[in-house]
Image 1 (cartoon, helix red, strand yellow):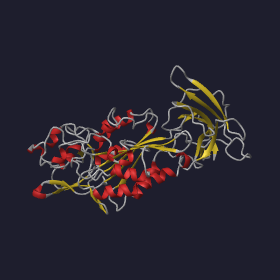
Image 2 (tube, helix red, strand yellow; image 1 turned 30 degrees about the vertical axis):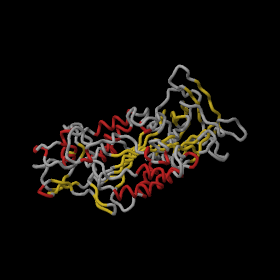
Image 3 (cartoon, helix red, strand yellow; image 1 turned 45 degrees about the vertical axis):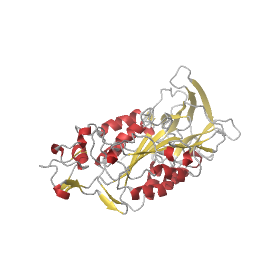
Image 4 (cartoon, one colour; image 1 turned 90 degrees about the vertical axis):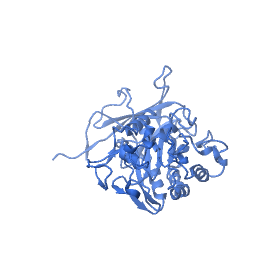
Length: 446
């Protein structure tokens, strides 16, 4: 392979900077230019949205016992294990002003986190597990992280059967509902665990006794929240094809509302990651249930029971390509699903999209040609720049270096930029502005 100059390349999903490239001489390669947080974005706010309706007992037990699989994936990051905030909310938003006769739907959890009842949290509503000034972990709970999470995730099965996962997610992340959980600088991860699709309702009349809407069952959520290839009678039994979230429902919020909401929480798209452990959305079939009432066949069946096809939730996942992950809930064990989600969390933003050019192939290690500047108050009136030198034995700290990191999958060598601070935390609220000469392989001429 050979390399060619293609001008300026920018790391995907990261903001480009406007710094001149004059300090880097022209090369037959190209320059990759990116801006990353000084902390290398080593913070993760992780929100679990857990279906607490009557059919979820086995799934809850598997989540509580297999949660360590997700943490194990984070532990494999070693010293870069994120500073964690972990919260749990339920899917229960009630049925609003409509009384369905089901007392389980007469109240709403409103997206409030479930940790306050756990003695290990001492009144806190979410878990905090972060690195302190001396490098040790500082927590707001007693005992183990696994046990504290298991207590939070034990949300019971008395929630409303009209599950509103996305409305609960939005409420949980809205100002004033769970103070202190959401950090502006942190990556945000959403994990939805559900055996029913989303029924986040814009008009409570969906739950009213209205013959035009059919029986008061969760089939209404499908009929008015999902659209499939046209059929003569949408309530007639039969397999449905081409099913996607409905965009013009008079009763359910459009998925686009939640996509826009999540995107508006962060400055960069790569700071949001969405995962779901749900019923398979590909198999959709309407059946005639008791008293000829229309009902949905399971999207999948397995060791943890059956689950409805999660068409709306899959639509949310599909809206975040490269920043999302979906697993089936229809297994006998959620351990693999949780581990896969942990392993799928976005790589740190300091990863290179293309391999840096080694300017000295005799000296061990990567001898890249880079300009790295530590910037505080990057967009404000007190902007300060501190150029960093490449790390050398006995040289000053902080300094920059390029290292191999298994979490960086964009290059075969797993390269990323790293700052050696000799154990001293970097300044808060700033960026590293990075430019490095990288190579772009092209096929030989035909």
